[in-house]
Length: 349
Image (cartoon, rainbow, N blue to C red):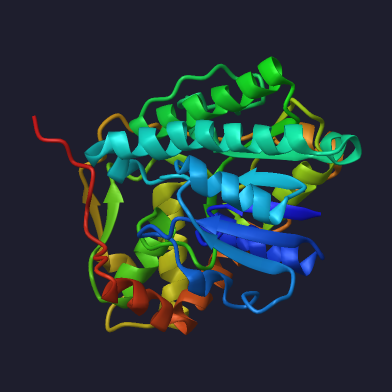
């Protein structure tokens, strides 16, 4: 299968690119190369005969038309998105443009390509829209998100992703496009840009800085290793039922403060400092409108396609800490591009 993967130089996208090449697929990596994209993430496959790269914006209709005509993909996996909640608070319109308009433009380009295909290829074509559990809002002390959970987004980021989800479903119902959707829990692992919780903790600890924890740290997230997620995404695009949504979770719910303390224990082993890393933990003001708890029920995906997350959280965190310690040059390269791991997303009254 030749898969056009948008956002393939990002964290999750690059994991999918690497896995797809390893599984024998042909890959066209379409990426705008924004601040969080990094071609080093796909350096291991860049010279592979089944790999091609296209620098383009999913909002660019003419560029997309040319890319579809040039590569004639059998499937599209749409991961390109602005994704950091703190940045969405400071610049919400960038998220609406990329996540809502970009998805609409890509859907139209993909529809035109799909309509032009001969019958056999048209029947086999797939468009996989990749989304987040944040579109469902927040949970209380119990319960889990499922494919039938009503949408209730609480942030500019989650609202923009919810809009994109609705567009994908509308293109399926209105035009009959062969579309599948997935909503995942919080990803972690190697190559994650150091602005999300886990890489922020690791990178700041390695720099000798304080480790910020939002609010009281009692927020609960379900953690999914990016390699498990990549496996699930490729399974859904190949075998998922058209028009269906699949929730993908790691079955690893923890409070943020617990995750931070686990990371500090691994850091004490792999990058010991003069004092235990946990002594650097500092509680800071939470972002506006925070969601208390996310948790995903992946039973539909398990029942239909036989997928379950394989990576236990403790082992996954150990693997992630080790990778960042052994690849400090990767993080340093990001810093040299102007990124500083400082707080974003505070709104002044």
